Length: 93
Image (cartoon, rainbow, N blue to C red; front, side, top):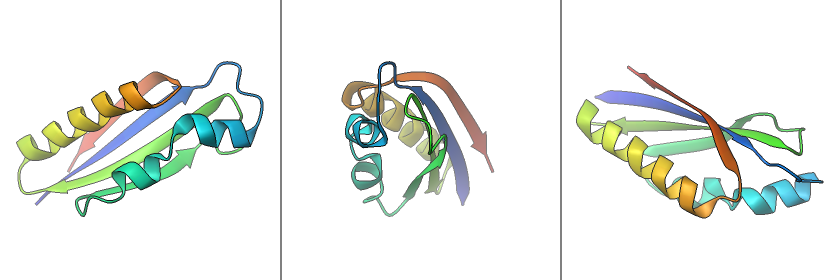
């Protein structure tokens, strides 16, 4: 069993409220939390309008499998979220 922790930090330029922030982040929990091998939560910058941090915990049978899932998550986020990714951190266990 292998585990990865993927943490993405976002910048939301021009975001004026927490409601707008939720709309711009596009329901990450609903989109990625459906998978039985992925857990997702907003892990930081909760009270800031112009920033957000999300953490994904990915579990798989091989490191290669979870690396692939991490790449898929990153690529999908860049397409669907109205924010700029400013930092990506990966940890493997």
